[in-house]
Image 1 (cartoon, rainbow, N blue to C red):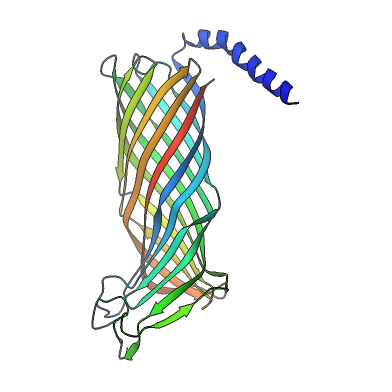
Image 2 (cartoon, rainbow, N blue to C red):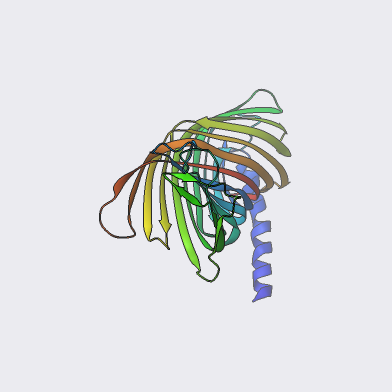
Length: 325
């Protein structure tokens, strides 16, 4: 069976030669790009105070991706020779995170009415349950010269992150009454969650639309180095937070803020039908805010519970194999 497989691969490679030669006379090419990479960073959940607490936040929860491996596919439609001819282009990318341990989940609270000091802190083992990213981009590219390429485009993105925290420990400042707390370093109450399994879970769904541009430097079809940047306030986020021990559930609906994403890609031709690319990008979202709603897990209707926020910071490194069809 292995011999048959190897033979089939060689047949495909050699039979491609006439097809690739004929394609050189066409204006556009369609490519499939398997991609493999790592996410490194975190997603953020925020709760803003509704009472007269002193700190600007009531709670902050950070869910690590340190790191999370992923695999995916990019489908690309673009000019066959972008440094020679201008034209439209588009791309559809899907990425699937590989579930597993991904660092720590940290939960901080500031509940004092007399100071901005930290009152509660807990840390748990973070498990990435599901990570999915879908990106669609379309735009126009045109060369300034035989080696300089400019692109302008619009990117539409959907992201889904699901985590849960298990085991871990907590440190609670002593409550002094009337909304006041001792310092968290002054004989705090400590608690262990080890052996309790899943303690908390959180999911985020993001949708945003953003314009962007890129500038590339290349030589014929041999290599191309590109820097890119997108920015937009058109951000929407939904969050679901479930505390297993207290059996409480919070659903957040948030908008606004800003998405920033600088990136770099270097591509080199390994054959007429194959390019190898290395991608590095940083996706950052901050300032997204909206209403938060509470209920016991799975029981009754949600009740308003003030204002929540969300954010993320993810460094993405990837290897792509661009196969021209």
